Length: 274
Image (cartoon, helix red, strand yellow):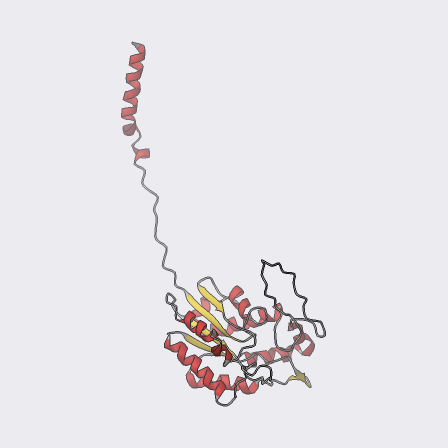
């Protein structure tokens, strides 16, 4: 009898349990909200080795000077001019990237001159004629970018670290002046790295400016790193010259570009880091 009574009482307790614990059974779910839509911008870097990874400032700019709300793509390629960058298909790839939807705005920084202005018998595909061909190529870049809704921004070339009587020779100035003229003519924003680099290098002096070279003067080219048959095969040749940049120089000019881009494009100021 006692056993049957115990079972009945247990069943009654179970039946009354929800009524005895209404708060625990009916606790409201934790509040949840939806994330605000992400507004992304895109910056594409198009140019020669002074914008390319390792040898220029482009990769450092993308890695250290833009917020995560900017998609930054470095398409700089060493040894390219406004002519062969287009001929080989690099410009087509850049234009395709500039056409991708989903961004608030797309900005394309363009930086050529050194290879346009260097006529070499072993590189006949590179150089361009100064007075007409070079500026025409730049105008075409600007026009085609605007046609896909992107904003072109021209950059003048960084000066070579070649001094005479304590002053930079600035042999690339004729091409730099053409870049500035096309910017003024087309209304494209301009970042004047030629002027800024001259001021920087002359303030530093020859020996200190040479510190930005990728290797010490007189040093042999960097040795090839060991590779395996199934590992990465590409190598970067680091050697002394008067134009390319080591890590310190890359950071200096990447910060310079970020500063001037913020002044030129106010909409990007809160997305650029000094």
